[in-house]
Length: 249
Image (tube, rainbow, N blue to C red; front, side, top):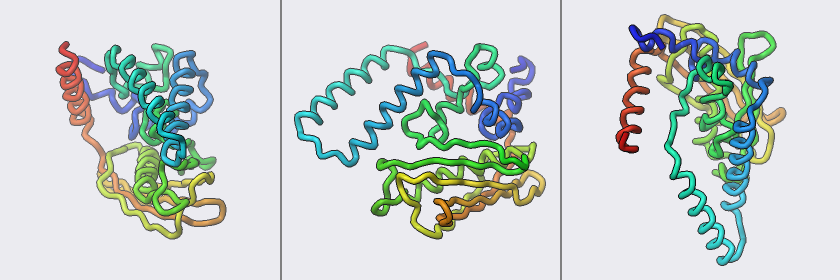
């Protein structure tokens, strides 16, 4: 970032909401992984598997206690290493040989984040809409055999957040409305689509759908407000200050 204006080149960095976000998603689907990135994803897959099996386990108490001990020991080992920001810029990360940054650690997209389903997103063939797919496992259950509505809403926020970047003047979520049309099944490949409805000054209106095969599960509309990059940069700076204070730097 520029020393004179720390926010001026933030939009080019490829974080969610940047003008190049949708195109970078498509490019990164084909990018070569580093050994570290491969292992981070493998680790997340392991944690994700534990999460989904834990919520429906019939394992005996000794096994549960043993597993809890192992996880506590593992968590302590990771605690020995300083925490780092997930908001690395695409250009900076690419120069370092790691172009994934936030993409891999997003709570909805991140293949290296066990909280994520994850959702895979790409630019539609017409270049004017976003397409996504995801399969939600047992840990996301709300109604019996179905995805919790809160996770459906979070997924729409991510999908439409990427969609609004196609406007060239991306922003942050101002309002999200979800219309639930039918229960969204677990363990089923789901398809999301998002389009820009209209742009009115700083207001970017988007619409989206969620389907399981031929079943329309939900529709959504979202309003995004073009962001002030200086304010976003300030939020990042404040978070870094808090992190340094926690680490005693």
